Image 1 (cartoon, rainbow, N blue to C red):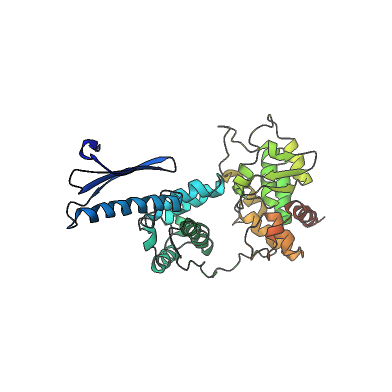
Image 2 (cartoon, rainbow, N blue to C red):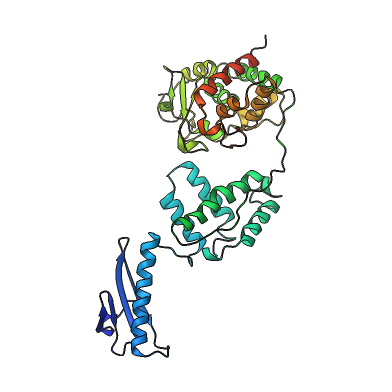
Length: 372
């Protein structure tokens, strides 16, 4: 509803007017490029004129000070959902990783604790969120509870930074104790991994001898690339002259470009893919867009290799176990796979040389896959 300015006839100070009996006041000022305007109604207050004027001035000063201090349009009374929106918009880079965190927030936090005022988010709310995720997820795979990794992502990589954002903007003075859950799951071990790796390599090279598209795709998986990294790879990311390829920041889990050595078997397969070598490497032959998981081809490879539980991600488990059996150093293996977990890479991640590590990993894979 529009404000009837004819009611406010008396100037109190710059940006503040009052009605004739000084029971209602109207203020207007600009902050962060936005005009702030509001009516202050003290009609039901048993105050004298001097007190009402003083209160109006104080409320206006407090509102101006609040806008200056925060630099953004939220206060301790703002909903967590609103603060989260500002955090992702103003504090985070535009990347695939940011989008993933936003999606996870909307999935697990938005309807559970997101409607609470940020000042009212307590330890019990964090504990309740953790407990609910331990008991039930939002998919068939997590119907009996989310993995510790997913819970850690939501609590440590999403909720905690949002709360810290409020502290950094002087809206909150402290935050709840947000801790990652204890890791209760055991690592997924692969028995006789070296043999499985060699068998997979032979199956890929045999089945797809005349299909370089799928030969390159599955070799990328064999050499440790995640499915998201494979399906988003562009020809411009591949340099045949230097034998390097780059997984761009928006397509990996750490938000930084990662450059790896291009192994000879992958380079040979890529060079024989018959298309214009522009845009996506593994584009859909039907739509020309990003490829869906190749379920039919994966099933064919699974049957040939005799690995019943083979998935696009299980390639990495086989590789990790096989190279571990061969004595490859954890730091080299972790960096070659693009790991982000500091515990996993024994604090190597901060200075991880993905190119050098992938060179050493590729030599180890070559030894493992050429057994005859």
